[in-house]
Image (tube, rainbow, N blue to C red; front, top):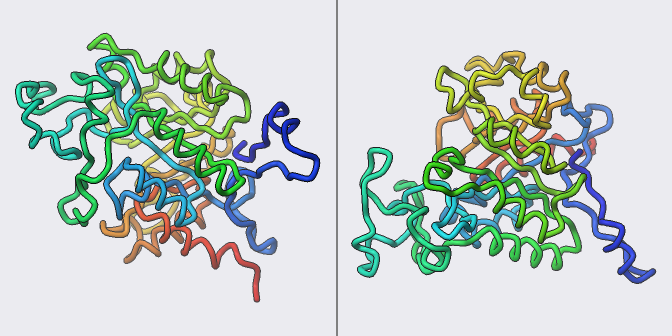
Length: 341
């Protein structure tokens, strides 16, 4: 499902001596060992908000660096602006990820929502948001690159993707996450038409397109399903909170509208490294499994090191791994993929 070809119209436009671009793809496994993924191909490295362990999350430089580090998929988070554009931000509030607190022209726009006093994405137009500069949100990560780059719209992000594709003569898969669609709807903002508009304009609203749309919101994906053939992924954190467990839907029910699931590591592996059985059950239903989130600078869920955790997930058979440090995930995968010397 994640191996893509160029559209026929685009292929026809290529000269006879030019080869059609190929998707950026993980390396083939040692044929003797194989992979336990749904396709039998190597698991994909997904750059979580770009290479967010090294640059401000969702910044242009974070996505560029992730591509340079060998990530197979780029993942932006999407909120909505007051004028209905999709904005590449993870949080609905702006104080931690931008320089807005130091912008006097926006001082009077601060208000209390969701139990927090802050500035909120949905209160600003896309042009106002693009005037802000992004910052590192984790205090224990480098702030060296703060205040240097603007907030992006989804169109800005896809402009970057197209630039990178032109440079590598390859196709780059993207995995946008729709954040808080129900909360946006309460403000009269529906991400669904805006998302479809971008997909349509970019030629991505088609079967086999190199895009995966993900969300924690099952009703949003259920609404989206009849309107697009692209791959849909149901995020899943487990536990008792409906906001993180697909509203209590079973895997069988999820498979009725989604093509993939995105579980937290703890949903797949017990602390001793034993499988919970969730991955096998998802694969039996034909669902891809993209696990989140592996971070070099946070304690691993399994094992002593991040390398232990990645090795366990690759061995289990995950189809993709979200990571803040794509270079580490690529490096751990490399010797597994390499044939014996």
